[in-house]
Image 1 (cartoon, rainbow, N blue to C red):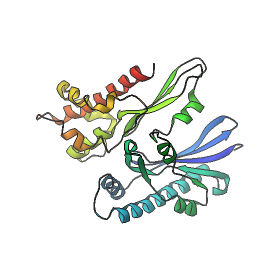
Image 2 (cartoon, rainbow, N blue to C red):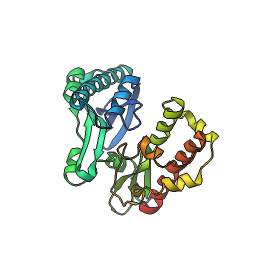
Image 3 (cartoon, rainbow, N blue to C red):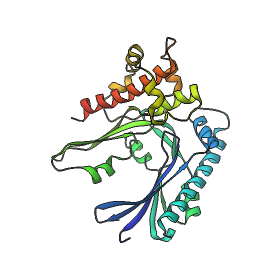
Length: 284
């Protein structure tokens, strides 16, 4: 490997686990060298879900889960390095924003947990963290994080491109031409509501290959009710998360005894339509 090496760690709103990538940079070129994934244990996932809402003894629970996450992050880094066959001393830095447990930019704060100092000690590698707070302090949304990277990798001199990332929340990066400013924003739920619904009904973490949604049909009245959420018509910049799009948000809008698979199919349609609407309204 001839370039500088960096490791990126990501654990997002899907709460499925930690993705790690070893990135090699040469001048302005980027190459993914190796990647690795570690799933969250059911215990950590439930603890993280519990921290999205106020409860007893929060400070101690946050600190304990932050340390547990950092150990998982470190294990993931060690396994990634083993895959790549390199030592920790070859890596310039780890970028790790932590795990979002509260996101309230409208009142000036966002909270990600993790223990960067512990991660640095466990791996022996410099850790860069706390990516969002400066943007929040400056009046921004602190999310999504990826537009600057998308600009560096995907922007084209003559083609207006839009990059769509569908995680727990779906977000878009608009990459116009002729020096127009790049923008990034959340369009609404990605797989978050579908995951919550299948976990409630079937005890499964996610709808593998969308098979359950494929059994259902769109409930048009429910879809139209969900689309009345004011977030969808807010102009960018905007961001969201579990603070808004929770299972309670969904249940409060189900007024009839619909078939469970039809609700799942409707949630899939909600994600698709809100992404498409956001592209049409704000990216062309």
